[in-house]
Image (cartoon, rainbow, N blue to C red):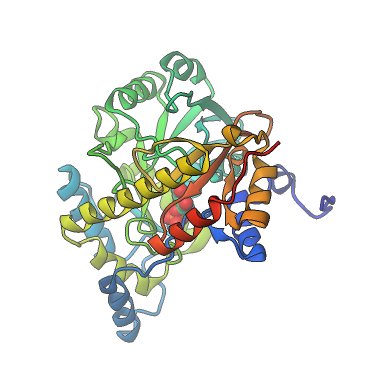
Length: 392
Ligand SMILES: Cc1ncc(COP(=O)(O)O)c(C=O)c1O
């Protein structure tokens, strides 16, 4: 239903409701297996849940320090040193936020002025477009090209202008599963240095990569630590998307601005869950290898099921989504297909066009499946997908 909302601000009117979250509601309405929104349907690790229960029983119930409890910031610094061999100062370089979602908007609001441009790779995780608009910035899209969602070096270079303030780099990438290579990250780093542009990285899937593909944080490249704002969180790594704990790592100078914005946006993330998150971040390295293997099995299962059902898929190197082309099944409209699939077949997905800017014709023949689910859920979806026939 379309109606004019006379109380909506120009900003609020200039973007639409999240399609991903809408598809979860569509799934519930039709009793469909929800492979739309990326949240696990299996229990979180017992240790993190027990830590949260203890934290509440121990009365960690009041506001935490606005930029994060000391034990969580110490754990983030400890894990960063272990995983990437780099020292970061927990006192001046870390801001704990309400999910990486808040971390991203706080980072943008803290560093980008109205009228400036923010480069976003297309397809993109849909929050970035709205985030840029909320900052009064203009998103400038650089398309990842098929086959394989490749980055074109010339196109990237052409997107940098005198107005460019920042580039958002999400790797491993939602929705495509692309893991940016060292060479591609090198191109981005070179352009950021040349044009004095900030890089805001979304590394929420840092531990979910497949087939030995390595996640390389952009800030580890020469000259990038001082100009990168690394946004991360515990949602995906510890299967607790509802806890809303994220964090942002940046230079002390940038962190000062982010902390101010964060304080006035939300004051702080849930105190007892920060205490629990601090314990999770100290899980041994095996935990992360097991997590990646767990998802790789599910990726392979769903890729086979989608292939058998007639989709043409792009094999993801990371994250937990598969982009599937609907043309071999005789469909050419992703939204029509997604609603048909939820209603008639009983599987909910996200239409591909929601990952492209509204005036783009791209994405209309793709849908996104997520596989962060129990095997029983994926098997139920696979059984239902067998009912799909070529559409005429
Ligand atoms: C790329 C990306 N960034 C951020 C988020 C949200 O993260 P959080 O739960 O930490 O807000 C998601 C969730 O799907 C995502 O895919």
